[in-house]
Length: 128
Ligand code: HEM
Image 1: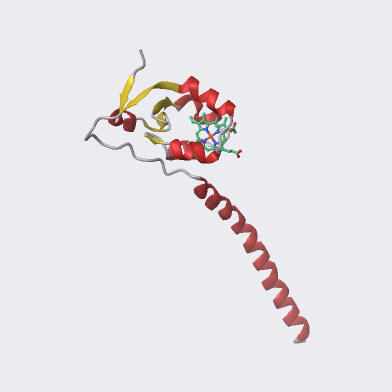
Image 2 (image 1 turned 135 degrees about the vertical axis):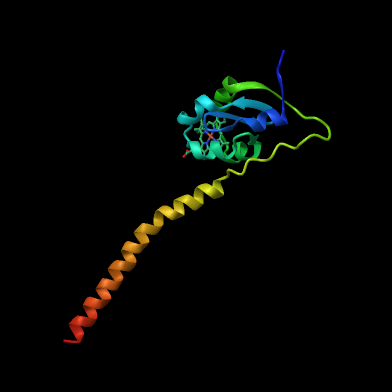
């Protein structure tokens, strides 16, 4: 019989070493998959112990990803009327874009630095 897992129980598994997430009311134990996720571990930790349906679907995961999911299934989410709501995962591609913007920054400073040096060299040449 399919195991039923409560919202409270899912929320307890919210660390890298013990990570559950919910996708379409199915509960998955993602702990062993974290290191091999092509999208990185960060996004999975962001949705640990949460509802990751939106994040998972936004990415447009392939059939392969759906197959991996099947292997991680541990039970159905049990919703109790009047009980706590499972928080939605906050991982999204917006976060990813943000971090890639930060990678651009050091390079920008090199360009700005080069322009300042060029300007000073130019001034010195003409002020001789
Ligand atoms: C247990 C759940 C998950 C499984 C089994 C899974 C599996 C995979 C797999 C197999 C890929 C490779 C591309 C593909 O086949 O679609 C992938 C890529 C990716 N996943 Fe997941 N994923 C999961 C959850 C998530 C979540 C919650 C996020 C949050 C946003 C996420 C973000 C991404 C991203 C951004 C990529 C693209 C990486 C790239 O191509 O650079 N995944 N995932």
